[in-house]
Image (cartoon, rainbow, N blue to C red; front, side, top):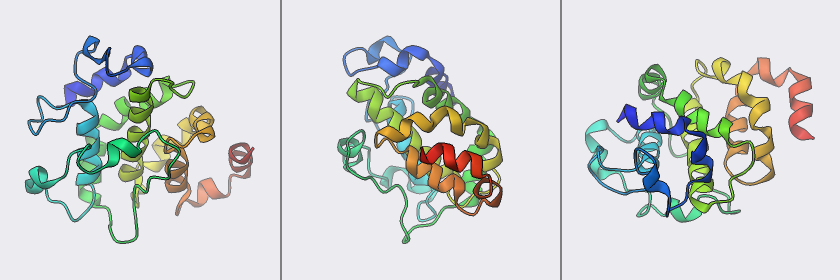
Length: 191
C-alpha cells in the first residue's frame, strides 16, 4: 500500500479528474475492500478513520467506505466538514506507527504542489481529504507538530476556500505554546 503514495508526489495530480485518473500509476478514487485495488483516496480515508481509538486494525472491514460514509459528497464543498469531535479520541500508538512510516510526507507533497486551489473536482476532494488525514494524524499528538511547522507558510493560501486547512492549522496551534507565542506567524495567517 505504501507504494501507492509515491503517486502523491506527481505534480500533474493537482489537475486530476475522474476521466484522467487512469493516467496515474494507481487510481485516485476507487472504492474496493481489497487494499491493493482501492484508490488512494479510500486508503487515506481509512487511515484517518483507523487513528480514531474506537477502531481496531481487525475492524478494517467494518469501516464504511468514503462513499457510503457520505464523506465523498461533502469533500471539496463549502460545507463545514468536522474531522474530529468531542466523542472520539485519537490513538497515539496508531499515530506513531503512521508517523514512522513517513506516508504523511508523500501526502504533504500533494498539498504543497497545490500552489492554487484545484479547479478539478476530484483534485479538490483529494486536497480536502489530505487535510482530513493530517488533522487525524496530529490530533493530540505533539511529537509530529514540530516537523510540520515549516510548511505552514506554504499552505496559508488554502485558507481562502474550505479545503480543511483551517482545521489543520487549528490542530497545529492546539496545545502548542511555541506556535501560539509566535505572533508574526499568527498575524500572517490572519491577514
